[in-house]
Length: 146
Length: 146
DNA sequence: ATCAATGCAAAGAATTTGCATCATG
DNA sequence: CATGATGCAAATTCTTTGCATTGAT
Image 1 (cartoon, rainbow over the protein chains, first blue to last red):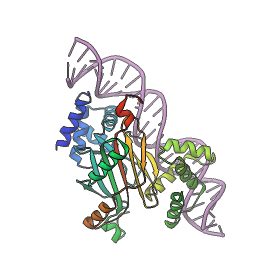
Image 2: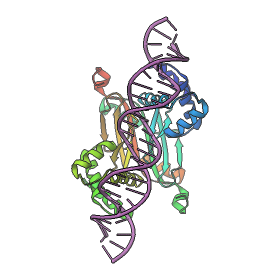
Image 3: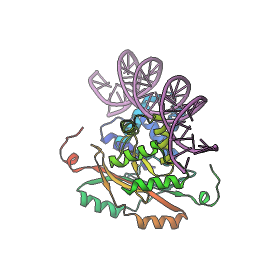
Image 4: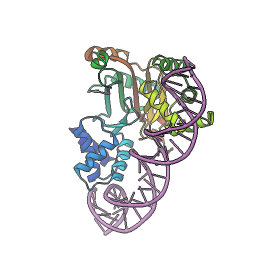
């Protein structure tokens, strides 16, 4: 929920205006609760407010990505899906390499590692993305989804 | 080095032929030692062996991705870069959100977490991708690279 | 020898751009 | 009000497809 507010604040802090298009993209991602490809985002934004143009959606995706407010992730396909990062700039999930089902993880458990890396490389880490993959129980069992 | 041999073995094991195009894409990725976008791969494969067509390169990227031999990753841009996964199916790096410089990490340090997740979700995890981002020392200090 | 994999070039998507207009701060 | 942001639609770039041919096993 506050992911959205955090996102808006980050935008403002970086000196960008809060416009309809930006609000729409963030809303759509927020409400999906998961991962959406650019086509899905385009479609949903169009449904939400038909007056918003394609170009603005892409421009917004660029902006939000460059600010690390959203992040493109790839499962086992070459088509990216965008996720809204948490307030702290994290995201973690498990993806099935067969059926592409995903399990969202709320805790990344890498706090310790972050500190080690920050010390070793003298860098301040603002966030991270952690993606695990494997066969989900049902795909491992039977050969269902193709 | 053996990343390449591992990749070839995985291909064979999955029942695919080892062809010139596939070898070329893997070589190019291996030699780059890092991340290449599809255009970069196309260009380098073309230089390496001009007789290999675009379509085969894309088909190879699809195949290698679906087998988790390579993986598209997004730094802070919406253009994917492909990386060759390690023998164990891992990859980890730190990216500067400003200049996009990357530091490759050889150890992912998430072994413990993997076991916990496998137990909790009853799933066998075959690998993972871990991406940290923040400002690298030089970008944090001066305002250089644009 | 067999059938997966390929190259080619055309078709189809996806994304970006230029510019006049609009809306946010 | 001033400028950043937008919508539109054309231009561009990227990716996929169909099919005859080739090559890996």
